[in-house]
Length: 374
Image (cartoon, rainbow, N blue to C red; front, side, top):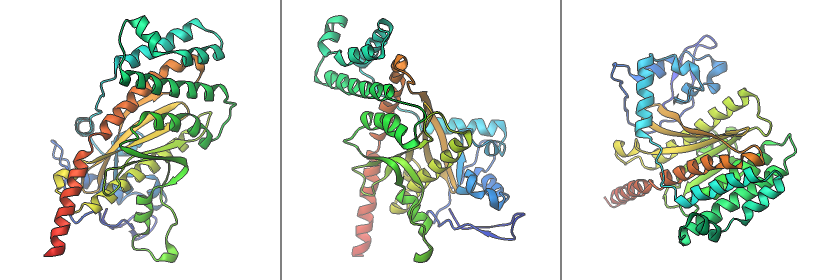
């Protein structure tokens, strides 16, 4: 994002301390002839000073989630539909092939809930489900991988149910995060591909570095954006933060403004992660860089939403929803976890597509080595 001077009602000139991403320019022209980057740049200069930090367009983010109506109003219905379709086509949610044993296990959970009234009985009965029981009932032979799936799902469901049974509302943001959304995310994502960190407030180092560039040491912010969960690609030379999560409030559900502000925070952290990766691979081809995307997770109340972001052009970071689901809010709705399980397995499948990043980093490393010897 280049530094600009914009006129507005509050001050004659407002300087944006946003360092350049890469010394290149890429435009996004829609079929109607609309230059998306120009539309956003024009609007950015009209944002009042008091509203800049709360406006995704100020940060170079094209919010396609619908959470920022002002962004949608900048474009015609036809242009907006075209941008949504482009995002959905280019960042498609890759569906993993869920094994039959997973569906069988969740069917068993649903049957147990129907046959038992007491929460303790439901939890105990789920904990007693065995691979032998499923083999006999469904007349199948399970392999080692099938048994691993059963163990993974059962452990997550029983832990979730026990946590749910102990909840005494209201509870804090960090407590609900550790009991539910973060606990499930850590269990269902691929630990071999991702280094996962979770906590009350994890600093987004990409944001911290970006905020501090060009500032005196005495004026530097100590931290950047904060998040509650981060997944770093282990095999990435530049340690790309492939997925970032944030929890909005505890239980019961917080005020809508809190959810909106956290949504903006999440999008900025994801943008800065992309910016850091682009800077580290400045020698890569444009077509390769613009294929890279990062994922985000925001949860509030019992709602869990997965988003994605890529860089479509100069100062155009597309930010859109992939899917939204509801987590179980009682023992009798534990079967709802089936949808969450499928979504997280799809996220796992998407992170497995990142070998292209390893290839890009390897090529850039070779180019940089050649420059050193010239």
